[in-house]
Length: 138
Image (tube, rainbow, N blue to C red; front, side):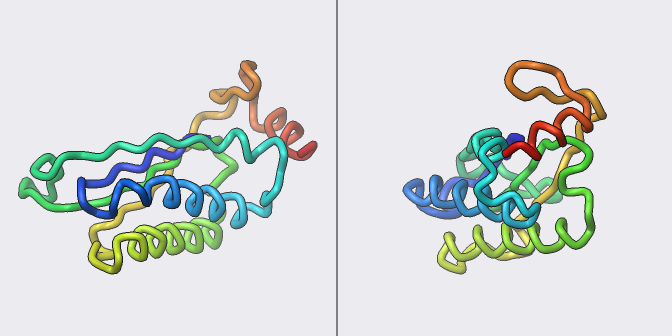
């Protein structure tokens, strides 16, 4: 389940990128009750995009921002309590790693859900039922 973390250059030092990914991943797993799950843990992937200053915009004006976007099956990040808790934790992670300099109102977290059957694990397309069965073995 890929995480795309996009930050404007300078939100936090590049040496903090791995720490951000680890903490956000751990928050996702914890909030879904999957900490230590041998199937899910290696299937949480991430890529990080660092946008040069001057190439991030809000309302058409340059600004400094941070975005965390998940692409997940429709059953993940589907419960409002889980969403609220995880999104709050992600915001706090980015805020703290920025040394408190990145305004929380310029930290964005969202989720994109795949249609049922539009996901794969171990190179095989799976629907939600098959994914759930695979994850429950972990």
